[in-house]
Length: 452
Image 1 (cartoon, rainbow, N blue to C red):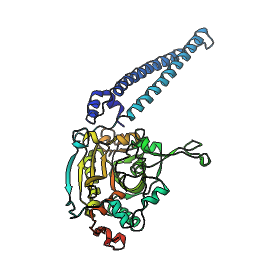
Image 2 (tube, helix red, strand yellow):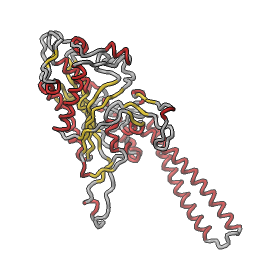
Image 3 (cartoon, rainbow, N blue to C red):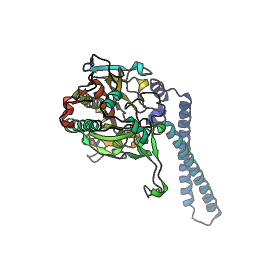
Image 4 (cartoon, helix red, strand yellow):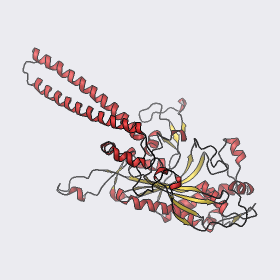
């Protein structure tokens, strides 16, 4: 979420910055300006009335005869002032709530280095890594390869759960497990991330914190609590409705919601393997064959909490960590910086890693590495306390520096299913067999290939 004071104090600048994204909601900006002015008026009126009430209370207190008509008159007047103050306080709360709802609907401001452009055609290819596989024969897609190798059973998945689910079996299931384990080992042992295991069900507050709510509610699976499972939780006898996570970003980033970290502990890096669930509302007809766009999938997620002054460098570091997996597997890919108009709702700056799929003759996203600035941290109240030396000058060393908002960064390291798809398609052979890259072989019992 953007800062309310900064947004309303220079609305034209915010409007221009969001215009880079193609966000031009004139009615919203007009309402925002009107409510901001109303808020100032109500606050000023309330403060003035509170001062008048304080003065009236003091004057009443100076009357010696508490039974006099003058005392009774001033007491009634004071009650009236109190009711008016309460009315203004209620009005202020209403205006604040309406302002808060509007602020939640504003996307993040693009970083100054984010390329100009309104759609993916303006995205910038930063680098292409590895050689595009020259197969010498007509490439099969991952579905044909996986079914030929006995790795994938879409028909039984459809029977169990419906369209856009998958069943992996035999070496298919083992490869999925092996890829996730390889990713975790690299990120923990080589990159120094702290591995966490997190819930797949979260409260709406967690989704609000990472900006999936309210904008993307249609893409989520909501789990309504059954009356038989009622429990006392957070003062709510029924307990909250929960959502299946669309990405590991949600529970991992919320680990530090409502916390103040010590600056000396930064940066913090976490890695988690999670199941992810997405309704994919509005995406029907797009990449629906096989494992590219499904309702449930596995992802290894990287999340970093960083000092604002180090965030740009830390973002590049997280991208490099995600790329390291592709490089170890020898997969051909490219890194693409998204233009302002193609940024995700909460992103300040984003670099996508796109892996080459010979069966589609196209690049497909396998990791989206986003720097959010303080956009998520403001929603979550995730802060850090700076080192005290500078702030303590002139205060005898006793003054604590004021907490500041963290910056958050995350990205897939990687999407496990799509990595499996890329491996099958890039390492395929004409006879339907698939070679296995050296880095993966220790995780599959030393096997070097898959054969029909």
